[in-house]
Structure formats: C-alpha cells, structure tokens
Image (tube, rainbow, N blue to C red; front, side, top):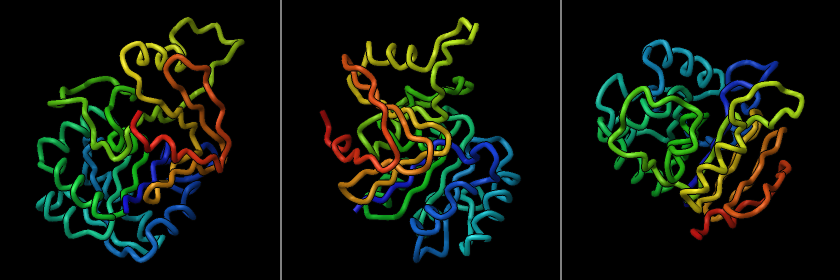
Length: 234
C-alpha cells in the first residue's frame, strides 16, 4: 500500500520549521525510527541535514542523509524517507544521477512512507512541469517519481485582483500547462498537504487547495476533501 504525505511548504507563516504539519508527520511515520533524508534540493547538504535531523529528533525519529554514505543503501535500509524543499530541477537531477530514482520507486511501491515538502512534493508527482522553480540545472528528464498520476503546484498563491503586478498569475501558468497536457493540477496553498493511504487520497491542513482540470473551471477544495479519483489515470 503506497503511503504519501505531500506538503506544500515546510514553513507556514507564523510557525517554525515543519511545525504546522508536526501532528500529521508523527501519525504518518508512526512505528518508524530511522528516516532517510534526501538533501539535494539545496547546495549545503550538511547544513540542510542538520536542520532536518534536529526537527525529526524532536519528534522521536533519527535521520540519516543519503549524502553521508551510499545513497541507495541508505534509502533502502530506512523505515521512511523525507525529501525537503529547494530547487526542483537540481533535486530531480541528483535523484537520477545517484541512482535513487529506481530505489525510491521500488521502496515506496512496497509501502515505505514517503514525505515531501515543496520540491519534495513536486518530484513525487508525474512530472516537475508545474514547479515554481527556475531550471538552474538540466535533469535527464522532467519525468518525476510518478507516485501519483497528477501534478502539484506547491506554495499556490491566489490571484490578487487589486495587484498592479503585470506578470502571469499561477492560474495563467497552469492554463498554459493544460494547453499541452491533460493531467490535473492541485494548487496546494501553504499550510495544506495531501495524504495518500493506498487508494485513498485526502486534502488535509488548514488552507485548502484549488483543483485545475483541462477545459473545466477551477474547483475550490476544502480541507478534508476526498481526492481519491485523482489516483485513477484519465
């Protein structure tokens, strides 16, 4: 049974690192003592690992980073995996380059709990084509880990009708994506996350989300919404 916790952001305004989703993390990783961390979204792997390790230890779990030894062996031996935020292109390139792509797909398919925040949530989806990040490196493919068949746009921001900013809104960018793809896109606001337990998918958190489908009006989603139908490939 595939188990996923896909969080929009690691920090919600007014709270500390992974504080807003701490209860969900504790429940999700219940029974896990050793978490593999993938730090490749940021350049400072040691500093990033220290930050994540301190937070997980507060929740009663130890962390070993895949950069501290054999990446595949570390991921394979862990009880769960956490991939944090940063640059999605750099993260996915490293996942391919280290051989973690196949290792993570195999372990998560076997039921190892996978938690991602921001870029870590992006790489859990079908492709990274709806990330907000700049392509600072070139991964061998935009195809991500494909744990779900849809797309996520993390840190989703609703358009401000009073703004004088003339750049594209998130809605416009997602509409452009749908000119080329039929995959649904979940715009996850900061403070929200998706929980997958097998064939069930639920929107959780406090801020809700927006569902975008090609050729259809956007749909506001409240916390607690059942999104299990998104797991069925269209």
